[in-house]
Image (cartoon, rainbow, N blue to C red):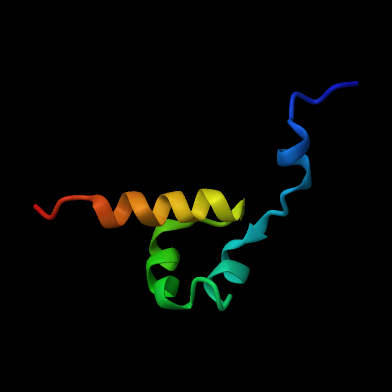
Length: 60
């Protein structure tokens, strides 16, 4: 009956790309989220990590 998820993972809500783009929390990075995220649902921690990784990237 165990699903392999921890209690924390089971309690963390996931949000759609649109919900994240139009949220107050990510207002400054809405355009970036539009480019980085595909349709689906994401944890806030996943989105924050994607933003950090993108901003740390080097310009070619």
